[in-house]
Length: 254
Image (cartoon, rainbow, N blue to C red; front, side, top):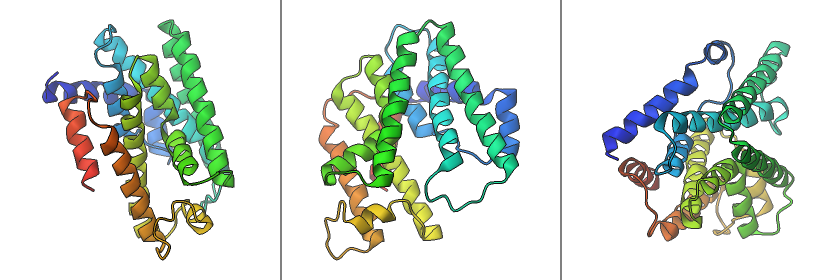
């Protein structure tokens, strides 16, 4: 598919996700997680080439994005180290939003009879939760285990989706690390603005301390470099679209 065609398809998926009355209401009244366009891109890559009709494929991607939104939204209610004090209305809207997103993906996948995919995504949610608990509580055996948990915490749902649609280990590895890289780059930007990061605890504990004299900013940069190196080491032979390749190179250059 051409670059322009891929862009057009992703815009259709985005429009499908956004075209919900309740979603628009939440957008005006709820300061919650936003749709991750990089995750949407990799979900699109994973489902491309299957026998699914484009319209059905777009709805399946949209449903999977709602899985991610539902998980991220519900997690905000009792997120560890959250500095923001939520009002009762904000907490109620958070629960409403998470339940709304959950109902959409259940309904869509059930309508298409994709019970196996629904079960796979639920396992992805479970693995995400387990990885995040281990990261928050630092139940980690070393650097390799820490990085594995980081990838799982951000990309387990994508990994289950891609595996369901027959993508090989190299593709899943690259896509999962790209999703993590996007998050780490955002975290670095947030750190520079606020001097706050959930990664500080891991840094202080000594995980991924490749430079013994590093301050936190250098530590985070080292972690980003490590993730980029993992992506580059697995890129050979992975078939992706021109648009995904362009985005991949853009992120690797940051």
